[in-house]
Length: 222
Ligand code: C5J
Image (cartoon, rainbow, N blue to C red):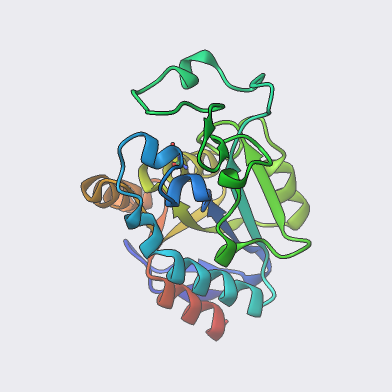
């Protein structure tokens, strides 16, 4: 077994069962004119982690380990968008509306795409998810089983919403989860700090956290 010097204690792993899950690094959350900005958020916070997420992705690829990407998005007919989700908040444009980057958070629209720098390679798994968690109404669980993945490293946005929800869902399903601290971000720095603390509290009740360099060093030493 290999080891990453994580908090609250080292994360031991078998490289054969490791995968990277990159959550929702989409233009709609990172660029002006998208869903995140429509809710009044400072999207530059998300842009700042792009080089670190890229480094993590490239490290997994170089080690021959799977990279899975998720995208929060809905069908063009909105049949998978509960009114409770569409009506929430006070955005300038709602999910499904026409915005500067096409229809907001709709599959296939320019704004829904993963950022170009982090684009999936042909053959990498891309999970389109209508919820905050990646297991709900998607083939994510089946894909993890197919890969034989048991230990998951997480990156992406936002820390306390889609990342934490997916980590909690994965933890309940028996996966061991580690969040790369500097490859995730929130629009609210205090929520990011709280989410990291919650995840590793009580002896890793949801999982572990470590820096991208610590993760990549652990993989390189394995
Ligand atoms: C949000 C996400 N925050 N990907 N989505 O609505 O975290």
